Length: 202
Image: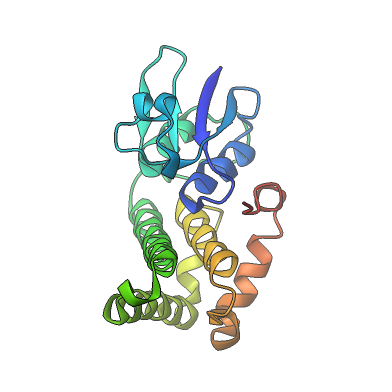
């Protein structure tokens, strides 16, 4: 059985966990809880970058980076519709949305790491830059909600995982109150069983 090195709090791993639910792969992948910051030897052996998620295949080969392993898993899907459109404009829209969603994750994770530093060592400039990046992306999606329309894609999954991570780690960010159209979309998508089953936690 394939092994997904994962964390219940990781928005990147959540993309894979949602995809596994949506594509009926639960009996092919087992989740292995991993703490990225603890440098567990088995984790570093699988992914020398020390990042999660990572997917150890049945032949021992490891795929790293959520974008890579999610597309691999999608190709194995036995249920539902593919989350990665095969070609054409829909594929590029999904991949662009995935980049935006991952960008929200990147900024939110960096904000969390900055907040864990001693207060005297925190950078107001970087904090403002990452905060603004999330806010601008929310404004863009709120103003053009059609970008998030259509069948569930990896792009929608990434955006939802990113926004849910913001709420999980930065509950005072307040994006939902400022962007009600995006907030309504978020409530709908996270009501899916795959999102309910993979809600972030420590």
